[in-house]
Structures are given as structure tokens and as C-alpha cells.
Image (tube, rainbow, N blue to C red):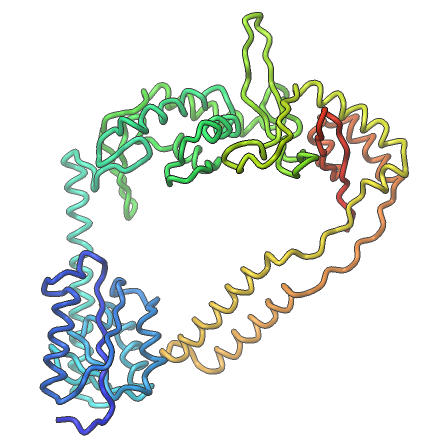
Length: 459
């Protein structure tokens, strides 16, 4: 019996939730073996620490908590040694960290683990190498099984891409997927997103908002043309699966998307037609001014409109500015207003916005620095770095924090005449939207189609 007066802690690890059941390597089995071992040594168990993480990862919240709580315990008990790690360097680092905080380390399967004892340390090293080799064999065997499954014509796991469910086309989302491909062949992503959100179609993640990235990932996924791919370690295998769109349509849509990206801003493209993309706000609520899809009349005329995004249900329909404005009419009003602005010094000064103070979005960056500092301290406790290395990281983090908290210098006053001359040149050589961006102008579209400008202050 050990002569300790303090209780022991138990540390358990499983690679994932599937191992948390009552199997040999599951949590219940590990805890039972550890408690039986503690009883044989006359130790009471005060707390059980559990990490669900692979044996080659050192990002273990509960292990770090155990190190912080070490003063409350005399020993820590593992189910078997490889619950520490299945990687040789990591095994040594974690055992050294436990011993460095004054804990005796025991394994219910192997007994005392002690690097200070030569015989014990030799046994520990041999078992660590064996555990690492076993991990490599398991990884290789699993990878080989996946390759064999794909070579046999089956996906590694049931396909769960948008439009699929449990490995089969989903009757609910597959038609939406086909509609997306149809629309993306002739319309830009922003127009498709507008329609999806206006009709309340949830995104693949189940959220009301769609993003351009989500759409482009869908369009570029070859599984939709019936090609499932599995690629690891430089080897790529493909097998046919049931297509949701024809290969010809998939190729056409991707070619159209790439062409639109390559020709952004050129005549005939969406950005050329909808000149106010990204530079217009609602004069009533401040929401983004967005655009509708094309309405084709029987006469062949095409109608396009700008409207306030704040009127959409997805945005809470909080804005009462519900008028839709033909884009050609808005562009004409803006052109006239810019002509007047280029000749009115006072109007320019009234439109200039003082640079906003640095927003507190740096709070997230500061929080990440705090978290990084905690990880470095944990690395020191684990013996992965020296105190000198920790001090170097402290200085670097402090310098980064100081830069984040710096107050920006006051911006110089706008040179009105020079700005007006530049505006005239930009209007003469650039499309309307590009000229607005180059001049730092935000258009405010108000009730009745009236427009005013906000000019970004220099600095």
C-alpha cells in the first residue's frame, strides 16, 4: 500500500465517440480497470479526467486541466500506457509533464511508470515504440480498406453532399440542387443567392443565409456529374455514382462560372450591369442595396431592379423602404449627381466621412492572443519548451497586443480640388461602379430614388 494521504486521479483517453462505449478500450472499461488498480494500492479516486482525441494529438484540454490540478493528487492512474499517447516523442513529453508536477504515474495494465528508474524507463520506451508501430499498422490497414472499398466500386462512406441523404439522392434537396445548376449557367452567384434566400431555402448547413463560397463549392463538386473521388497520399481513385446533373451540364456551368470570374467588370458581365454592387446602401436603414434577377418581358425587354436588402424576411424585414428601382434610372440619377458633386466644393466637404475610430473587432484578436499565451504556458508545463522560449513568446505576444491597441493617427484633410479632378478623370475612363470605388464613394439610395453620397475620408 502506498503511503500517500492525497487521493488519486484517473486519466482516460479514447480516439472518438465510438470508443466511449462498454468495449475493451472504451471509457467504462478503462475506468473500471483504473478503480480496481487504485483499490489494490489503497488509493481513493477523487476525479476522472477524459479526453476524446487521437493518440498523436497533444491538444488535450482535460490533460492540461489535470496538470493544473496536480497539487490535489498524489498519483494519476491510466488504463494502459498507450492512453497517454501512441506517438513516441509525445508519450515521453506527457509522462515527463506529469512527473514534473509531482505526480506518481501508474498504469492499470503495466504498473508504475517512472522515467527516473532505468529498468522502468526502458520498459516504457519499448511499449511506446510498440504502441506507435501498432498505430501505424492500424492506419495503414484502415487506408488499405478504404482503397479496396473504392476499387470495388463503393464510396468510403455514404455520400452526404447537398442533394444527397444517406448515400442516395434526397427527394427534397436534389431538385434544388438541379435548379442551382440551371440558374448558375446564366446568372451570377449573387442573383442565385437572392432567390434562394427570398424563397426561404435553407443552406446545406441548415442556415437561412447562403454564401458565394457555398455555391461555388457545390458547382465545382464532381460528385454531382456522377464522379466520386477518393484521394490520399498522392493517389486518386474515382468511381461512377448516380449523377444529379448530366456531365455536359456540369461542364457548361463550371465553364460559365470561370468565364464570369475571368471577365469581371467587362461589358456584358453582371458587375458591369449592376454597377452599384458593393457601393450602395439604403438611405433609410443602412442595409446593402442589392439587385433582383432579370425579368424578361414578352416584348423581349429585360427589367432589372435595385432594392433594400433590409426588406427581406431573412434580414427581419425591418426596413419600410420597399420600393424597387430600375437600375438604369438609378444609374442616370447618380451620373447627374456626380456631375454636380465635381463642381460643388461645399457638397464634397459635407459628404466626407471622418475616418471611424478603430472598431472593437480587435477584441477577437486579443482573445486569440490570450488563448495562444495559455497554450504556450501549457507547453512549458508539459516540458515542450524552455522558460527562455516562453519569455520570447511573451515579448512577441505583448508587441502584437500593443499594435492592436494603437490609436490611429488623425487623417489629413481632403484636398477637395484634387479629389474633384481625380473624380472627373475616373468617370471619363472607368465604368460607373469602378469610378465610385476609386473615389471612395458610397451611394445612399433613399425613398423616391433620391441619392446622396458619403465620401471615405483620406488617411
